[in-house]
Amino acid sequence: LAGSVFAAVDIGASSGRVILGRISTGSGTPGANTADGGPARATLDVVHRFPNGVVESDGGLRWDFDALFAEVLTGLAAAGKAAVERGETITSIGIDTWAVDYGLVNAAGELTAQPYSYRDERSRAAVARVHGKLDPARLYATTGLQFLQFNTIYQLASEPDLDGLQALLIPDLIAFLLTGQRRTEATNASTTGLFDAVAGEWATELFGPLGLPKDLFPTLIQPGETLGTLLPSIAERTGLPAATTVVAVGSHDTASAVAAVPAEQENFAYISSGTWSLVGLELHHPVLTEASRVANFTNERGVDGTTRYLRNVGGLWLLSECQRTWAEGGYRPAIGELLDAAAVLPPGGPRINPDDPAFIAPDNMPDRIRAAARNTGAVLPAEPAAVVRCILDSLAAGYARTIADAERLAGVAVDVVHIVGGGSQNALLCQLTAQATGKPVIAGPVEATALGNVLVQARAAGVATGGLPQLRSIVGAGTSLRRYEPLDLIANTAKS
Ligand code: ADP
Ligand code: LRH
Image (cartoon, rainbow, N blue to C red; front, side):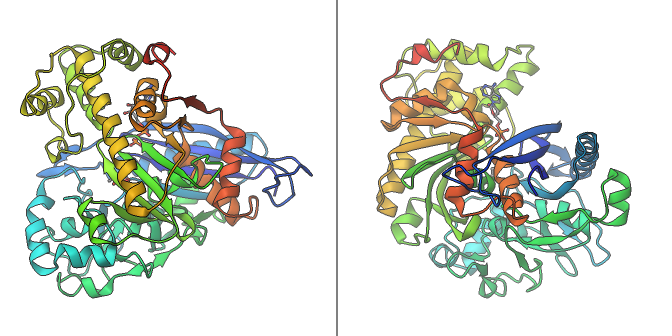
C-alpha cells in the first residue's frame, strides 16, 4: 500500500480543487504512524483548480452546481491521468465542500433545481416560523448548533413543497452523482440543525413539528466508511477504473480542515480561515449550556466523533467582496500589495463587528464597512488600505474574543492558535491575531482541508493508522509552518 494515491475533491465557497494526495512512508523510525512502521508525510499535487461563487439565477442566489460537477469530472479525469503517468492507481476519492446547503433530488434521482446559496435572503424570513414551532433553547439543547439565519433547518422551512423529494447536502449530492448511492455524511449533517449532537444521529423528533418528511435526508455515513464505486457512465467520462471507490471523509470542509490542524499537543485553538473564519476548540463532548447558546457557540461533529466547538466569525469574504467592488471600479491590486499598504497604517483604527448579518449578501462591501464604522462613531477613510486594515483589525479582535469565550465556556486553556486555510497566507492577519490573543500563532497548511480529506481516506485504506494526533503528525512532518509571536512587530510581517 505504500505509495498509494488518493483523490480529494475540495470545494470552498470561493474556489474548488481536485488534489492528488500521497502518503509516503519511511521505516523503523520512532514516532511511526503508518501501517509499515515509518514516519509518514503527505504530499499534495493540485491537478485542477476552478473558481466558485454565488450566481443570481432563477429568482435567487444559487450555486451553479452543474458547472461545479463538470469541474469535478474534469478534475477527476486529470487526476486519473496524472496517476497513470506515474504508474499509480487512485485508491479512492473523497469529497468535501462548504456546509449547510443542499440540492433536492426526485425519485428518479434528478436534481430539481440548482441549489440555493446560504447567502440567499429567503431563509431569514423562515427563522421566526421555525422558532414559533420549536423554541431556540430546545433546538440548542438537542442540536448544539449556533444560530445562523442560513442553517439548513431555516432553508428547508422556506421550501414550498418537499413532497417526494430528498435533500442531499452538496458533498453528498456530488457523491450520489458519482456512485448512485444516497447517504448523508455525519460531520456535515451536524450543520443542518436537525442532528442530535449527543447521540450523533438525526434528531427525528424535530422533523414532525416542522412538517418535514422523516426520510427527507438519506441515512448517515461516517468518515472512513466506503460509500460505493463509480457508476459506469462516470468511469467512462473520467477514464477512472469503475472499481474506484468513493470513501466518506469529513465532508464538511471545516471538519476536514480541523482534522489536519498540525497541533502537537491537546491545548490548541484553531482558526480555519477562508470565506469564513471558523474559530474554536476541539472537544470530546458537546457543551450545551445556556451560556454557550447565548454566546452562540456551535457543537459541530468532527472526524472520529470529536466536537468542533466554534463560532463562525466573519471571514475573508469581507476582503474578497471589497476586492470585487474595487475591481468593478477598475482598481485591481495584487492581494500582497493591499496587505503591505494596510500593514504600515498605525494600530488603533476603527473596528466593526465582522459577524454583522448585514455583510452576508453580496453587495458593495467597502460602503457597508464604512457605514458600520460610522455607526460606531468612527470615520473610516475611503482608501482601500484603511478599509483592509479595518477588516483585519476587526477579524483579529473577533478571534481573540471568540477564543477567550471558548476557553471560558468549555473550561479549558489553550497555549497556541493554529491558523489553517487560504487565510494562513495573510501574514498581517496572522500577526494581528497573535497580538490580539496574546498567544503564538502557527500558520499553515494552506490546503489543510484537502489534507484532512486525504488523511481520512489513507486511514480507511490502512496506509495511515491511529487517531487524530497520529494523522496530525503526518501533516506536521510534511508542511513548513510559520510562527508569529505576540510581541513581534507588524512591520516585520509586511512584504514577507
Ligand atoms: P474557501 O475554502 O472558503 O473558498 P480558502 O481557504 O481557499 O477559502 O481561502 C481563500 C482566501 O485566502 C482568499 O479570500 C484570500 O483572502 C486568502 N488568500 C489566498 N491567497 C492569498 C495570499 N497569497 N496572501 C494572502 N491571502 C491569500
Ligand atoms: C466554511 C463553511 C462553514 C459554514 C459555512 C456555510 O466553508 O463550511 O463551516 O458555516 O461554510
